[in-house]
Every structure is written in structure tokens, then in C-alpha cells.
Length: 205
Image (cartoon, rainbow, N blue to C red; front, side, top):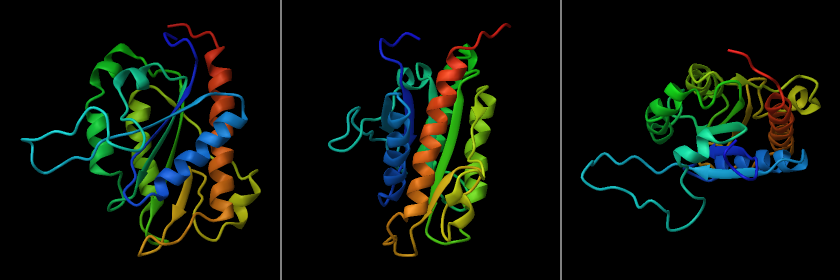
């Protein structure tokens, strides 16, 4: 680790604020487990390529840098569901991580995924699975949610064994439910515990 203070990265993109809410709940779980959570987002992708976003956003969380990513001990990755897949801004970010992939900077580090949708059957699980693909290619270890979490059995909206999730409604006016929040916090705790354990492991190549 090149960073003086080890951290778990919570990387998200949010269009209506609910994915951001889940991100902060996951960060809470990370902190409760004794780790530092570093929260970052990614800039939007505009159809015009002649202009670019500033390196630092005017408000909200900072944009993720390649250093933020490669130096993390673990990663929580979140995106809204767009047609059963992660959003274009998040996909664009991962399409530009080839240098980190070549260096193997994320190998043997734990990662989890989370998402939000407007409807109950809006592709939550396909989005969660699709977000795992680049992480697997980077050599990361996927951490899901076990059914030992009571909220996973009783939730009537979001929450899957593949990762925390939220159903925001067609107008995106539904707040994160108690069960959805509980699962996000639990996922953060599990990720932090896994990060500590894997950081102490000796890997031979």
C-alpha cells in the first residue's frame, strides 16, 4: 500500500440520489468495522466530445482518480440500472482502467456491488452481475450478501444476495427502506472485514 492510511473505496454514480444514499450506508458499515471509507464518484459522459468536465466537481463527492482505485484495500462499486446494465459514465470509467489491469493493482482485493432501479423488475440482478465482470477481470474477489442477514429474507423491495439494492419507484420518490439500508450497512461491514483479512494474506505468484 502506498497510502499512509489504508482505506476501502466506495465508488458510485448516481442520477437521482438514491445510489448515493446506498453508497453512504455502505461507507457507514465500513467505518463501523474499523476501516476508513473513501467515497468517490465519476463524471457524467456527454454526447458531445468537444468539451470536458472539470477535474474537481463544483459540489458533491470528488471524482475518482486511478490512484484512488489502485491503492484501495477493497472496493464497493455502485450504479443505477440502465436497461439492465451499469450506466455509461461508470462503464466509461472502467474502460479506462487498462493500465491498472496490466499492473495487477487490484488482484486479490475484495469487491462488492450495489444498484438502484425505478421498478421492482428493472434489471437489478443483471446490473449487479454485469458490474462484477470488470472486477473479475481485474482479479478481485467478489463479496456478496449471505442469507444470514435477516433483512435479506424479509425485504419487500431491494436487497439481493448479489449485492445491496434499492427500488426508488417510477418517479424516484421512494426513500431507502429500513431493510435496504440495513443490508447496505451489512455489506459495508462484510467488505471491510474481508479487506482486512485479505490484506494480511501472503500471496505467492
